Figure: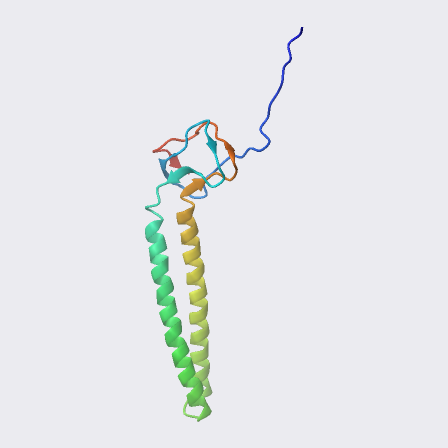
Length: 144
């Protein structure tokens, strides 16, 4: 009787890459083990990203406070304009200042979201269920 040869191939495979650069501080999986979608694969040192996120949160709070002041000033100018107590120019300036503060808050909100994403991306997880193969990096490796 002749030999029978077969060929097996994984139905699904992925290459995992980090979205941020940094030092690998953890590889909490065992080569060849079964993992589930969302299981941690690599941990990148988040210390450079954490202060950026905190600074962006502070910038966001500052922008919120500036918008509150600008809104209050605008409301006062709007009321004063009704009684002709301020010029149209003063009212227009207050409105422009309020609109600029609103835009600055939007930019601050976006910066917070990006900083938060970068911090979250320090934890690389499996996108699928399956068996992991070889680690191509080790702890201490600088991910670029």
